[in-house]
Length: 279
Image 1 (cartoon, rainbow, N blue to C red):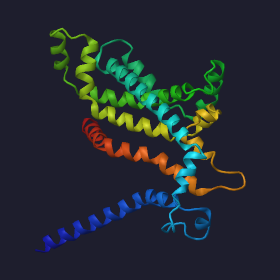
Image 2: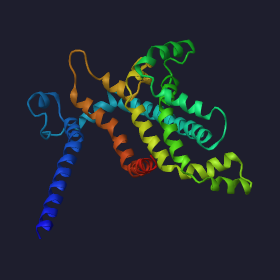
Image 3: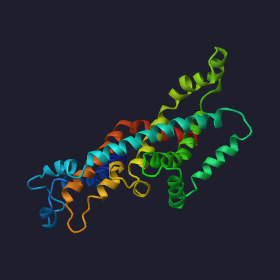
Image 4: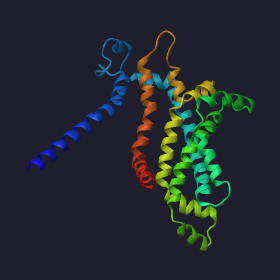
C-alpha cells in the first residue's frame, strides 16, 4: 500500500515538474505574440508582460506594408529552401560513397569533412568575403547559399553515414542481381530507408540557415536581397523604435519554425533514437 502511494506521489511530482517545464519553454512564444499586439506607450507604460489592451493588430499591417517583412521573409525562404535541398542531395550522395562503397580515400574523405566541423564560422568570414567579392558573387543569393551549404555538409554526412551503415547489404546485392544500376539503388532503395535522417538534416539545416545573421549582414547589402534576420534588425530606428511592428515581424519569422517542428518532430525523434541505439 505504501509503495502504491509513493508511486502515485512520484508520478504526480514528475507530471507537475513537466507541466512547469513546458510552461517555461512555451511562455516566451506566448509573450512574443502578446508583445506584437502592443504599442510603445503600453510597453513603456509598465504593461510589458500583461495582455494587450486593446490589441494593436495594425502592427502586423505596418510590418508587412511599411517594413517589407514579407519581402525579407521570401528571401529567407528561398535561400533556406535551396540550402536544404543542396545539403540533402550532396550529403546523401557523399555519405553513400563513403559508407557503402570501397575505395582507397573513403576514410580520408570522411576525416576531411569531419575537420570541416572544427573550422569556426567567424574565422571563415573574412576569407569568404574576399572570395565572394573576387568571383562577383557578393550581393547575390549564392553568397549565402554556398557558405550555408558548406557548413551544413559535415554534420549531415555523419548522420547519413550512420544510417546507411545500418542498411543490410543484401538489399543492394539483390537489386544489383535484378539489374538495378547504382543510381537506381541509391534513389529507390537507400533514400526511402533514411527518411528520418533526411528529416533531421532538413530541420537542423533550416534552423541554421533561417536564423543566421552574421553572413547575411556581411555578404548582402542590397535591400531587395536582405533576409528576415537582417530585415528585422533594420527596423530598429536611430532615435525612435516602434517595438510593436518589430514584435509582429518576429512572430511572422517564427511561424515557419514552429510549423516545421510540429510536422517533422516525430521523424527527428526517430532519427535521434535510432542514432543513440546504433551509437
